[in-house]
Image (cartoon, rainbow, N blue to C red; front, side, top):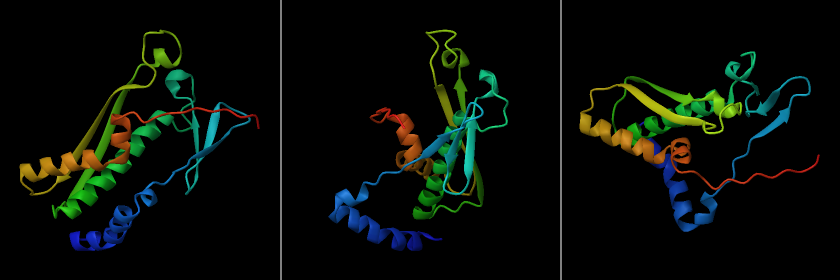
Length: 169
């Protein structure tokens, strides 16, 4: 896809969102079912069933997916799609590229061993390795706009309003 095809594809959506801002707000959903035989949750991904379980550092077998890994994978997926879209829009040719993310967790917090240890990632690093002849100023712009428009990056960077509810099923 080239920049013109991307603009043509997105133009009607952008116009719609300008004219009817409420139409741009959608609710994405995720659902899971607690496993009845192990400490795991079966998450519907839309394509397959992903079974998440305890990380080996918290006593898990390592056979199930780790939700921390899934969070980093979501970041990589979103950043990868975003960098491709922005590169296309800016007409920056990318021959190839990889996106990687790594995050530091202190499992003392998760396991309640140390009440001062944080629960969750204390640092996440996102890296792009891009094969391109584009000048550095264009690459700087590409990364800046990728950060700006990557939904998962921005969600992690600016904590959204969170709510937790419980109902009896």
